Length: 301
Image 1: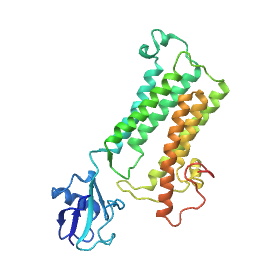
Image 2: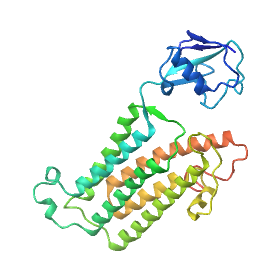
Image 3: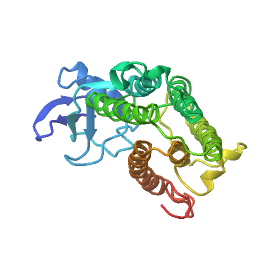
Image 4: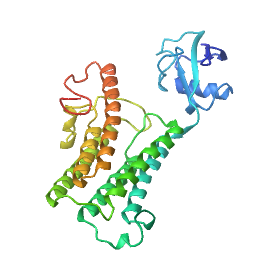
């Protein structure tokens, strides 16, 4: 089978000949790269139409209904970087930035600030923040299985700016010598809720990992497991985002800090956009998808 590879403008770049019908899109990308008519496979996006949907690496020529003489359109995605590298950078930064400001460096707070007393909630907040991002780093290394191996390198700067910037903004205020602590009962109740939300988030990530065999991009309908935290799957498509929101809402109330609330609100907005998209994809991909589920907040969104 012969396939014509066209540029985004419609110009024919090359013609790949004698392709077996079982050739995958991933193999097709490699052939294009070897023919020196396209960038390395991680930078390539192939589509059947100029503005069509990206083809999945595991799709085959036969499953897409391609025939000899058919065309695919190539788009160069630009320089790429591994998802794991981006995640490690964007999570290590907030951990380092927050703990640096927790020590009250003179450059931000002036001489002698570190010797002034800390409210108990300041220590608890630092422990919660550190535990969250340490968990994120460990999940990136040992838990997450990414459906795509790379992302555009510009995302590294965008994501790091967001996470590192908010870390400094929140940490500056919570660790300030003039920070006013809320009541102990408010602190301890919210710290407990934060810890439970983090456990819930981890439980969902483990459940999602078990749905995808290593080295694949297989997608299945997620259902509750024996872990009680996964019961949230009965109500929403993305309970990992739900628990994430609950964690930062608890952190915000615990610290009674406006910058923490802004961080929570910004994160909730972005996670809602992601959750709505994933919810739509689930319903489109699986005809038997549970109809009663919402995307991120039970019964509401």
